[in-house]
Image (cartoon, rainbow, N blue to C red; front, side, top):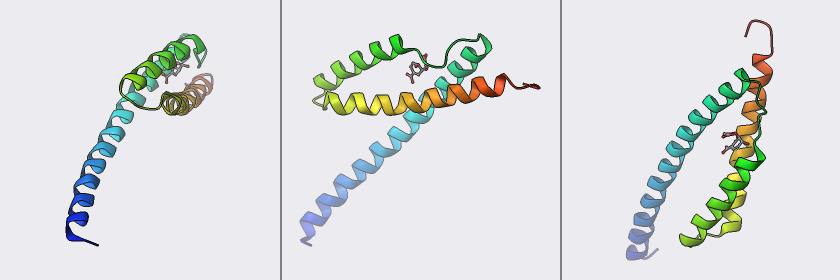
Length: 102
Ligand SMILES: C=C(O[C@@H]1C=C(C(=O)O)C=C[C@H]1O)C(=O)O
């Protein structure tokens, strides 16, 4: 590979690695918050999913994506993927808190 091409590829990949690290840290913080929401919901016998809240988040994220020149369809799919995992966690928390000893 041409030396200049290799250098450019390395520079871009370093940036990608930093962004991926930031994404992991941001997701970890988001899941910390959603776990607390899950515990709060379980304590107060609230349902794991809140479709109205999700609808507002998706509409907001799609708008943000458009202004950031990111594909809004992709943004919606990505958020739905994360929310599905969060709901799974909330269902597990609700199940556990319903067991004797919890
Ligand atoms: C975190 C919550 O629970 C669920 C997960 C959501 C999310 O990950 O953003 C949004 C709505 C709920 O379906 C919440 O109700 O705020």
